[in-house]
Length: 166
Image (cartoon, rainbow, N blue to C red; front, side):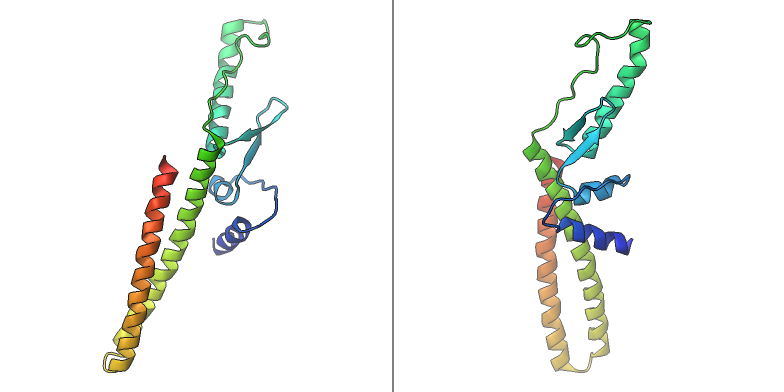
């Protein structure tokens, strides 16, 4: 898991273009800005809403394929007649904003986890140096800075969470 987190961080900051193929939905949503898929029609299609849109289109295609033999009998489906209805997609900018918000949430969660570890270490140091008032003052200042940083990150996370749900 730690290696995967390092890989995600590296790919998330990659300035160039990469083709990423994975079965891990979270990983794909975390490291990609654009999702393309082979939907079985011989075409490569861009999916502005990412993996979620792929799953919707695939389900629609499977349900339409299952319904076709019952509706058409042994005849085929003529082009433009009873094929799969097009799936309405959200504007690309909205989907990109939601994906960016989810990335930001993940990044902030990792930073909050690191801050929690650092906070625990500071509390241990405070307990160790209970008699050294100068050291306590310095540690208290560090703890206050950490608390302020944590509050800012929590605010950033809430903002990103709001954007990712829209």
